[in-house]
Amino acid sequence: MISPASFALAYALDWLIGDPTWLPHPVRWIGQIINGGEQLLRRFTRAPIGEFIAGLVLTVTLVGTFGFGSWILLRWLGVWNPKLAFAVSVYLAASTLATRSLLDEAQTVRRFLVNGDLLSARQQVARIVGRDTQDLDEPEVTRGD
Image (cartoon, rainbow, N blue to C red; front, side):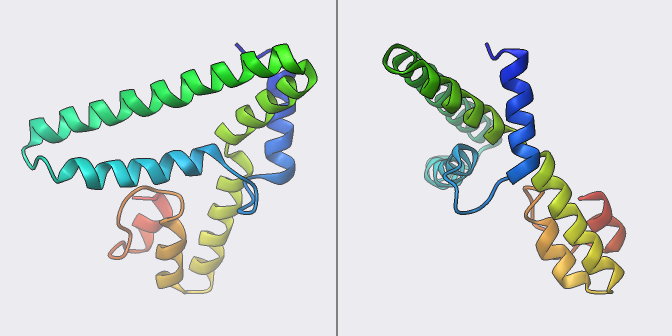
């Protein structure tokens, strides 16, 4: 479990740097694995119950792998170098937060809408939501529908 001090540092780190694309980011890796896993698993089923089970398997596998892997990594680092383990735990916690990045993305969507550029606003809101945004009208873009 993360300490309040570690969480405060992780939150401050998220506010300071957000999620720069140049920095390795576990949540992005998870997103890429989800996309690949969905494509792979959909080859085997089209039925709603099959898709549900495939999604459940993918979710449990990913959460288990990344959760257990993070725990093992931090335990190993804690034995080898406790200061490095602390730094990595703060980084991992910060990578699960997205306050700064969400605000930055939302500001960009707003800027496009204020300038009347609905197409760009749709493309930008797609960076925040996990669905097709190409046919959204302005109120739907604003809500992130």
